[in-house]
View 1: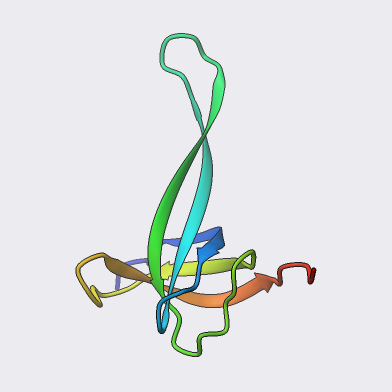
View 2: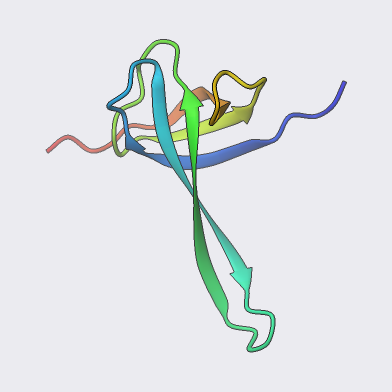
Length: 84
């Protein structure tokens, strides 16, 4: 069996049913100047229980394609967003 990739990110949208948009931030070094930069990627992730809300920190795991853009699934909520 192959090892599935697991990433951590912040939920930026939960307006869809059983789906969330997760922003994953990573640091990369500029090829010429060497300065460290932040890069953000967004992933659509399947959330079966609709438990994740905007601002929550979640772990997502690679899965089979569930739709045209959805290839990740929320495995657990690491940290809930602060209540306002």
